[in-house]
Length: 216
Image 1 (cartoon, rainbow, N blue to C red):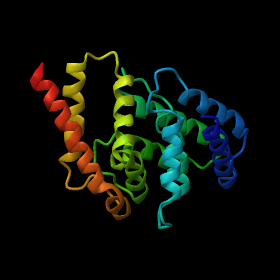
Image 2: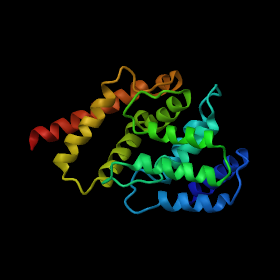
Image 3: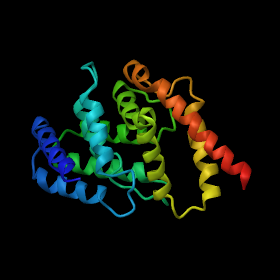
Image 4: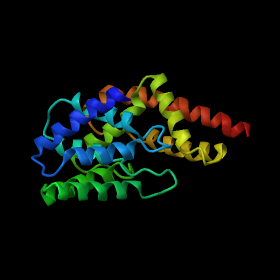
């Protein structure tokens, strides 16, 4: 994880400078690092943030405001409690506070807030930035089998307090909702890159849950 930390710190400081933000970026980074290193974060940790930033770097330049997307990525899972239902709202509030305390415009803070709320994945993303951000967040679904399976194990660990039968039924519903979409990804770039693999991963995972549910 140390190699991720050094690279992440450099990425954060570069973003801070590009925004011409005021205040101490090191203090904000340490807070984010502490949050993403909390016990119980088997998936929603610093490796997830590093993966998301890597996906953003690989995205071809377009009309999107990628600085707002990057800022939102840093904060989108800053508050994470698998027993709570308001993680995105609290993460968005934290991001908004950090943006305003750094002297960034209220319009930017509002945009970042809306972007983080889009990662609830409960509605069609309504802006180019939201489409990009949500696709990056979902890019884990289109990874090779071993990476996807490690992600699935991480989610299960984060919900270890839920009996497996209940977890299987709930998780199956989540995965089915993504599989039922006309397209999982909103941008042509990520659709071409990950749609086919993501659908195969979802089908395989749903089938495994089906098998368990039938056997119990």
